[in-house]
Length: 489
Image (cartoon, rainbow, N blue to C red; front, side):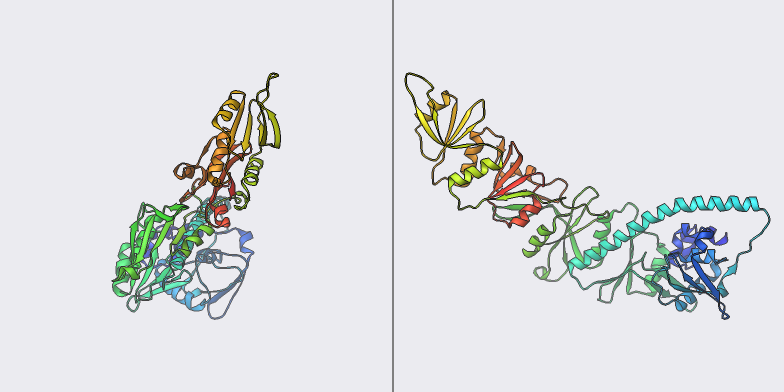
């Protein structure tokens, strides 16, 4: 129990130069007998306990389950010998299955078990199992968070394509004089080598004592500690980390890209390497994606990169996909005739029509006014007619009084104007102003907004966006809201 009690006080243990794997007190609880069956062991004559693991286990659990405990006085010496005997071990926080482990016994003390007081012994055993189960859940959550943070650090610097390397495996030993040593587990304290005679130690959990940090920086001036502070979020951590690695970091409101088809992107930071000549520095945009936000589609990020705009997105949560599926899309050849184009639009939106149908507009016995309609649509309450020739305003006015709405489309009419006339003829709710359509065509919870030329309309078959944007088809499909049907012409 001496080891278990001492492990509960993080700062106290650090002042005795303890390695980081003892920062997880839940590891100190003993496994039950079933867990012990997963370890094969034998003891050599040289005072070394040799074990082959059949399951993953923390080092401090292994010591306890092997029937030993380690006091503070021997901790530094034990760790030095352990690292020497187990050069292949990358992290003592979790020793991997099938690993051969050698424990130097001269620093360990055998635990004395008493056969009497069986009732109390069992009670303690049950209580330990309950506590271990509760603590294990917390540890797993912390491990997941730690994994994401390390992943974010690597993604950030790899995306910036800087001459920076990150090491997050194994142990780092700092010798202070002849008989003092501090050992750090790199899975908790990853080192970031700037390759400029400086190395950062990233204390992203904020557990390293300030006194020891100052001590190590004095004895090892090439190392600099960057620590998490209370209240920091991932955005704050990234800001500090980039500053320490030689970047200028500025808040950024929005980035506008494009001409007629315009995309606004909203990053958190604009960053560039500090150089005497600012023009020699490559600008990058960093975004911290929140838990309820979606990652920007890869096609859009690649499109921005081709325009020399580097976008890096990281998150302290698993990314939500940009969209479940791509937008439903249809493509109409821009070279089609006005008649074919109109028929395609009507069909896509679910309207039945007739060609060259003769209509008696006057509907009287005394005289007749017949019109051979190029396209006619019977909506029940009112008939709609599309003519590809010009009719006089008198004819159109008379037909309207008789319950017929007529729209005339000329041969030189632009497709955008043609769409507008169809929408108005059918009395549909629509918008063709980019500032208005942006809120309808842009997906929710993303870091960008779309200002595309085109018409947003609600029809019998749902919402449509009809556009003649010059952007590539695949890019359009990936960025427009998946609830829409897109028609590209």
